[in-house]
View: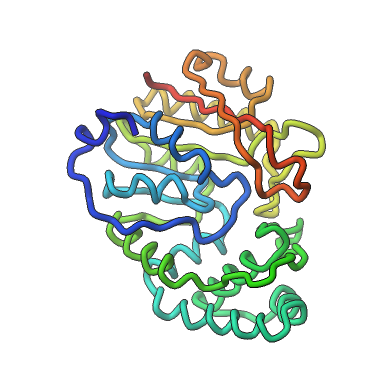
Length: 293
C-alpha cells in the first residue's frame, strides 16, 4: 500500500501471518508488493469477487474489517467457510488424507479423485484441499461435466495439512468480518458495491496465445465476450465512484477494452509457476489497470 495508506486507512489490526492454502491459476503471491503499492490510500469496504487463493486479501486484512469475498467455485468457497468456522474439525480430516496418501500415494490419490461418495461440508473441504496439494503441479481443474480431472503430481512429500497456516487463516477470516459467498462477480458487484469501496478484480486471464488459455477452474470458460462484459461493469462501477484495480494479460485486446484507463496501467513481469511446461513459467507480463490516481 502507498506510504500514506497505512495512516489513512485508520486502525491497523494485529493479524497472524498466513498464505494461500491452495495453488490457484493466476495466483498473486508474487505480485503482492506491486499490488499493495497501487492500492488506494483510503477506501470503505473491500471486494474480491475472483477470490482464488486470496493472496491479496490476506495481505490487506490488517487494514480493513469489512471484506466481501466471493468466487464462482463452490468447492473453493466451501473450503474457506470450513477453515473460518470449523478449522479444528478440518485438521484431523486432512491428517487422515495425509496418512492414507503416504501409505500408497497413487492408489489413494485416484481413489479420492474418482470417489462418487457424497461428503459433508468438512469432508468436502478436506478432499478439495488434499487433491489440490497432491495433483499435478498443484492445479485445480475440472472438465465440462464439473469433475476434477487432474492426474497425480510428482511430489515426494507433499504437505496436505499445514495446520498452523489453516489456524491463522481462520483467525484472519473471523477478524476481518469476511462475507464469503458463491457468486458470479456481476451479481455481487452490481448489487453491493458503493462509492469509495475498493474492488480488486483478478479474472481468468485473456490468453496470450492459442495454447495459453486456462479457465477450467470451473466448468465454464471465460471468453473474450466475458472480458468485454467485465469491461462494461468496470466502467459502470467507475461511474458509481468505486475504486477498481484490475489484473489481466498484457494483450492488445485487453489494452483496447481499457483504453480510457491506459495512462494508469502498470506492466509487471511474473513467473507463471502453474504452467505445466517449465520453460513457459517465465517471461510473461501482466497489466494492472486502475481507475484512480
